[in-house]
Length: 47
Length: 138
Figure: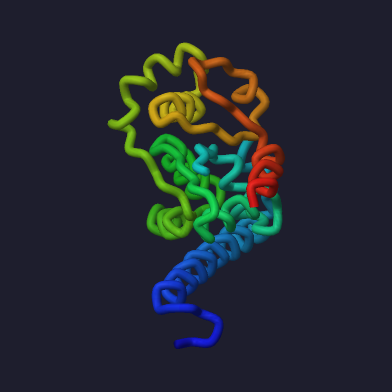
């Protein structure tokens, strides 16, 4: 078994969590990049 | 613990994952909390990301589906929404009030108007308070 994981289920759970965090990070980067390109602030979006 | 969240929290998290809102969404990705929102909030976010940020609907959907949020379909809270709208005129906010009452779930928001709204026994909480509570729960 992979070092640090007591069983396969724990390993899969860890991989799924990391996948969800990576997806969130990707979305945030894309969103932030477009806001910077358009010189918008959060207040411009949520007024 | 599960929480209903509004568009402001979600936009704040997308803008800065290191912010308090970002921390909350990261906790959801780690299955430490469950975040829920409504179809109204989804559509509001889709409208803003397309109209103000110039994303196509497909691009907006790609961003929104990466959020660790469970979206509740309008038909599930439609009847309650009519009542919630009498307490709060904004449809997006009223949709959260309606769902909060139906599923007995707190709302997290930074919107002062929403925070001041009384609707049935719905509890509304500021983001910082929620993070403090979750910190103590650890």
